Amino acid sequence: MRSIWNGSLAFGLVSIPVKLMSATENRAVSFRQIHTADGGRVRYRKVCELEDEEVAAADTVRGYEMPDGTVVTVTDEDLASLPLRTTKTIEVVAVLPADRIDPLQMDAAYYLAVNGADAAKPYVLLREALRRTGNIALTKFALRGRERLAMLRVVGEVLCLHALLWPDEIRSTDHVAPEGRVTVKDAELDLADALMDTLGEIDPDSVHDEYRTALDELITAKLAGELPEPSRPQGPAGADVIDLAAILERSVEAARKKPGGTPRKASTKKSTGPAAKRTAKKAPKKTSKKTSKKATKTAAKTAAKTAAKVKKGTAAKTGAKTGVATGAATVKKSAAPRKRSA
Image (tube, rainbow, N blue to C red; front, side, top):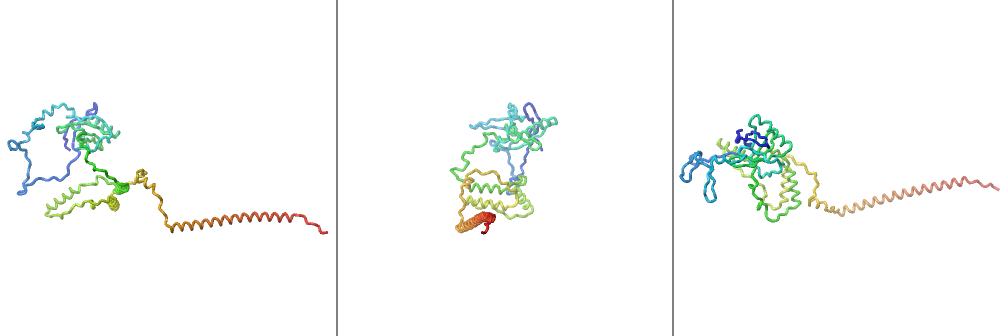
């Protein structure tokens, strides 16, 4: 990879010579403007508005236009004379947790490579310090005529620099959210949760640009003298249906039937929302008259059997007591002396 910036990474009093190179590349299919009549390529040229003549790049200079129309020229020498430490230095200004950076600020990404053998050890030292703490370094550096805010983090075995937008470059969210009061039912939220659980997980590396693939196939077919059949893009069906719950239910069923993907594990956390409270307050379902009569009849039979057992047991106990008493009386009578006859 070709470096686009050479300088140093300043971490306190430690200075690490580094090279900056783009971490991403544009894979989009690019087109050229072609003259319809003869197929010649149409190019854009720099033309002076006053003389209506083409101007070479060497004959141009930067200019800043004031509100009143006055133009102030700025040369390369003017920019080089600016007292900026970040002109050739990536300066670490703070070390922060990664969640302190708003994703809205994320811009272009760059890899930092060592520029010389002596830079290897301090480079690895900073990399491992950030890796062990899990933090990121907030930095400032100048690139292409402007000072940039950037986030330095660890990606594998490399330090990666993410250019950030300045906080005042993030637009306000005013007048973006839906206006008026919008009520969402608990049942709809439950269906939305079920849909998210059913959609499952996917490996981000498996996602590809389907539009670019279709465009490549179109170009290949036209080179071969073939013209593929036009296909209409399929949008979400029933977008004008107001019954949101019904749409969600159909979405859940469709997601369950869709092959691929790994369903997410259901959360074991007890729900404490309104839906859970409403479920807890639900009364038990009423039983039918037929079921109630059957239950009453069964209970009566059980009670009768129990009473019979109790009665039988009581009688047995009573008979046993009576038998013992009778036996004792018989023994006592037979033990009495007989009277002599006269």
